[in-house]
Length: 124
Image (cartoon, rainbow, N blue to C red):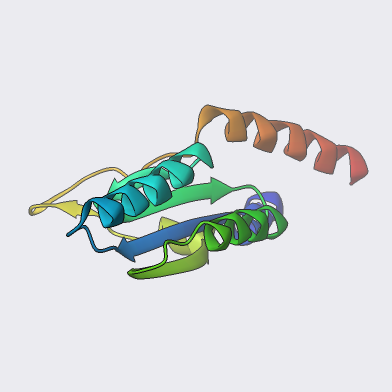
């Protein structure tokens, strides 16, 4: 129980919301480059112009936020925020009027949790 509680507040989600101009060819290229860099860094599309990434720790999330900041386009609006896994768990997602399941972390991170939980049990 306590292990699960620890993870829920330690594991982070990063959400990147952006509204970038796409009127000229250069602006479209800048927006596309920004989006491709997010995907290359492990972000997945949550909605159009909203990308999210699961991070195993706060320290790891800081690294990815720093990468997002380093690739900001010259024009437009970008919002980056971090929430805990517990806060993410409380999110309600609807498609029309029907509730849809929340996205799950990638398989690789589940392996990390498994290894981390074994390590924690060995130290207790």
